[in-house]
Length: 389
Image (cartoon, rainbow, N blue to C red; front, side, top):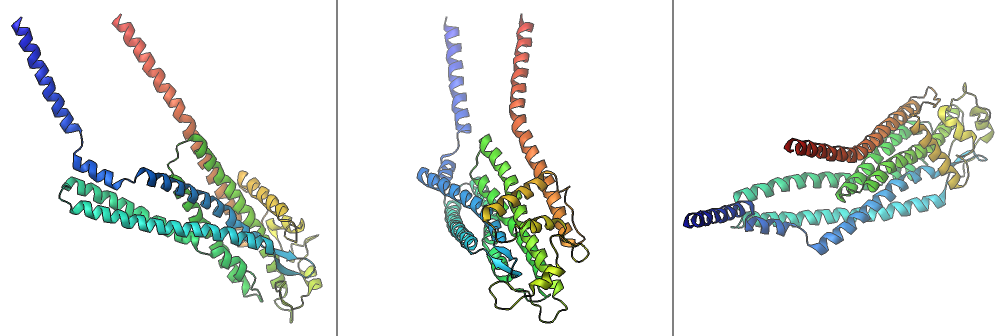
């Protein structure tokens, strides 16, 4: 009986030694734990940070939806043949944009302060005696990654905060006097279109920072991009319709002495009868001036003095309809920028459709592959049990 007892005691002692070795190798060093804990935010700070990130996401949503409102501010005064302004909508758009800009400026300051605090912690940890070379290397890699993310985020925020819609629509667009206005408005159109790129990137970046994994939230976000695109396309369609009509006025007054196209705030008299003959709408004359795909909104009177909800929902429906059918029903004129806008609608609709379908397939395939893997494990277990019998 002594031999089995000694054998058991030897095995138990060996097992204890192996457990001590594995525990010593698997458990992280106290210095590394202390370094990582010092870099992690406290629970109260993390709760406040998450609440602030939610505030930033909501502000991004408001900003993306509010910026196209600037494109609805211009309107046509049909009696005086001048360019008017929706003053109530101007106040609402400026107020919403100012509130969201305040949130984004505060977020930029927060990111700068957070980076300075992180840099101070990394410097103190790298210079401390308890930090190992491996720890310092990991901290340096993490700091490089966060530095790159920080600069990208700051650049996107700064580009999105620039008051491009305010200056472009409220200042440049209403300063038309002669045909030299037309080249300026083309540059204005490109700037307004490019303004929405950092806005969408900022919204996506803020959404990713929340690390939301709920399928419903991700599905709503993907569908929200489709809604935003329809809103933006409809607003630009309305704005370009007014631009095409004013361009017709400028071309008609080009060789006429004393014919000046102004906005309705000026006291300069306009030749409304002459402009009606030169730019006919009902019925239209494509020989004199072809309005192309903007003729519908001009003939229906939506560019005139009308309630904003009617303008908005009609333009939104137009954008949603043409994004859904990839702009195949658009009847354009020979105007180059009009055709570029139609091409952009077609490409945007196709990309959004592919993006939405791809995300839906990912969401559907995950539970399917989970069920398939479970069934495969079950069948493997049944085959193994039969072979054992």
